[in-house]
Image 1 (spheres, rainbow, N blue to C red):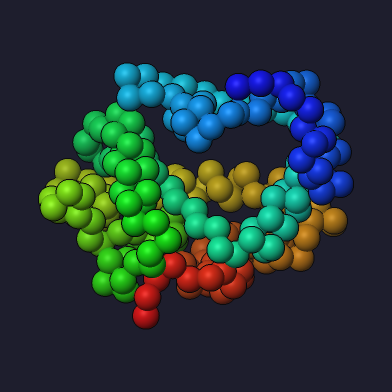
Image 2: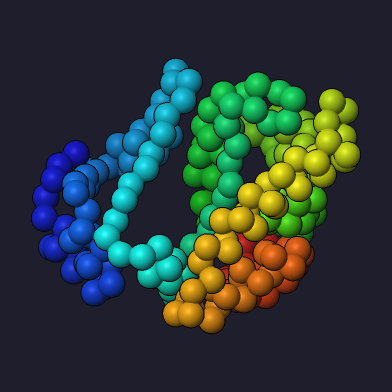
Length: 209
């Protein structure tokens, strides 16, 4: 890892302005270092990563949203840690997901492997997952199927998460928020479905019909 000059990468003007205001900046030399910084290691029990950059949050949100719009081949996942429902799992989901996705490469998922998550904020959930010939139990992929949680317990937790999101996104409703950003926030506040979220940004699909 090093502290080399980030200007050699010629970032966009908006990104350069944000980077210039950072009190410190670390550039990693390898994917392994990046993963270690982001996820710590398998023996760790917890970690926290945070940063502050110059400018208003709505400016940063517009910049991030533009990246999503312009780079539609990028795929994103949400990966739990510590607990999946009633099960204590530590950081094992990250390690399994990293290995599984690395082996898949850019191969799309089949339609029967994916389902809309019961909580739309979580996007889609895997319906089937097999790692090294072994099927992962569905209650690790769809928490509402765990007997200890059930649909009622899942929905109660989803409402807590949704209320947290509603409080957070309301702070970004500034006049100069990008129109698409306003649509996404409105979708969140209106309790939008997974399909309604997907319709807002036309990304290259990773799911076969």
